[in-house]
Length: 285
Image 1: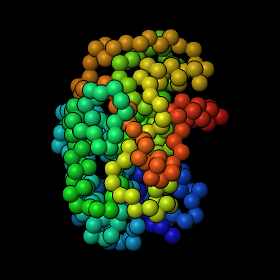
Image 2: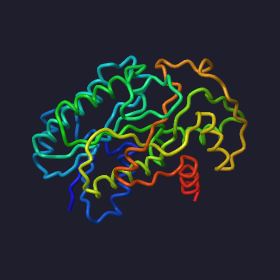
Image 3: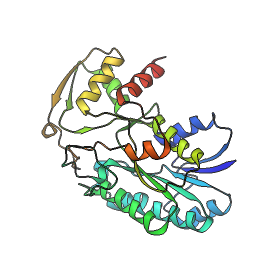
């Protein structure tokens, strides 16, 4: 049995992995949320590792409140930088392979082609910078790691764009949605499948990877697809980012190139619209 620690298990990805774990008979998962394991506490982190013989640690714990990070620098830094550093040190000490989840927000968005793992990073805000610094902390300590950058996550769990749109559609007749930020929606279940695929493959292709669903769209295009698939009648207006002033600046373009992860681990990645269609039909049924 391959023994796997999942940190931040109460979040979207952690919850999806928990669901997927029921289908696995060769993987032994230990799921710990932030109350059971505070990854910013090095003593507690090391104690958890020392009490189990983990093969892998999947770090789903993160500070993801992009706008709040601009104000609460300290908390974002502790969770997104110190936390991964503590996990990397414990992984190094106990011979554990760390799988860490990062973000498309490490890029500035000033391009018009999908970002490769080798492209220059330049975060626009505190959230992106702390996630990038977390990557660096891991890379400085470990050789055996996988860092997976992803984007626009949604699932049946927690708060996300799909849930918000469907909820707002019940309350309003008309919505304005940003149409000048382009990226790729990612079903967290597809990311969970990719991570499990990496573990089961036993390949030693350590390093940095990008994963999202295939294709690209804007938040407006994403919203339109949600309403079309769910057969929800509501008027959706495309607007520019100027109409929605946010504390943190968002990248205009953050589509990720998935060629590397697809080829190294032979992962068949669904198109974002196909995955969204499956997701909405599943939650409706």
